[in-house]
Image (cartoon, rainbow, N blue to C red; front, side):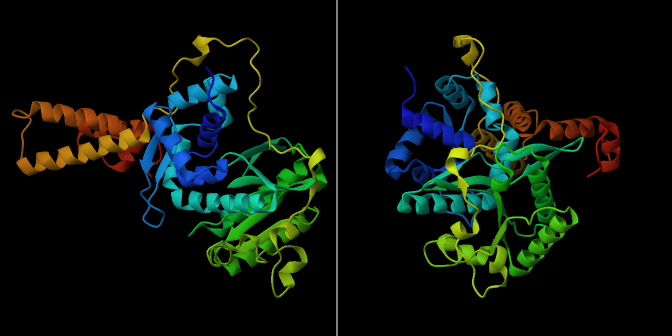
Length: 388
């Protein structure tokens, strides 16, 4: 028996956007929050999803959800591809999962903008299409392989036209040089010819900066690169986080807060759809190059959908292990327990230590336990890694 369509949609979004809240998923699916919450709880009970309470103080106190290895297998079965092919398609890995969690403040801002655009489009009878978190686009520049990365890739469809754009969202404390390099790669990608659509309908670059000074400097950088490389003027659309996030209950997304073209010198900005360049829907490809879900060359059987080890132990379980580790460590110190009378406690302590630590940390501790006092330089020399 196949997956229900709504369950398949739910698992697909958890693959594309790991660590979604039920409120965010309800907007994406255009369904009642209670219905989505029940479906997510059922997925957690069946082992297809994992749940983790939001731990960033500045963000809403919500439970976040992501796929598990069992969820990958279930979704792959519904789509009709092998689980590892599905994992490659959505870049599902422990590294991506932890990266999203560790950068949750930034991810929340990016997703809030896209969700606001989704809600705005529905009110107007339009449509928004978006892809996975942090799309990476490989392209060739001469004989060199390059990669342009953005925070999101979005297509706004209005009537017979569509408005594609890459999104860059400035981080607090991020060096401006990082954004300059991304703008440079964006221009190189446009000139490479590797984009699957028309050159003249190449997606715009929408950037949200932390302040007005960075906005002006990034715009001048883009213009200078375009002139140096003898390119068409870059289609760069800019605003600041204060303008986007600080206007009433609804973000200023639909307001005249955007700077592009002649609007840079105007007293006020223009609206986003005015700034974006329209491309005909009939001639436009919605997806940027990503590992495709090609139909398998043979009919898949049950052997192809055996359990896989892609994401590994759920994050919530790892965090629980670490918390138990801290509690055990505190209990041992408080009672001054020795290894002899508390062998079981110490064995559990060591087991949890091995489960909670990364392989790299385990290797460092192993060296220290065998050779005693070692400096960072000594450990780096033995492991062949950097001292940092």
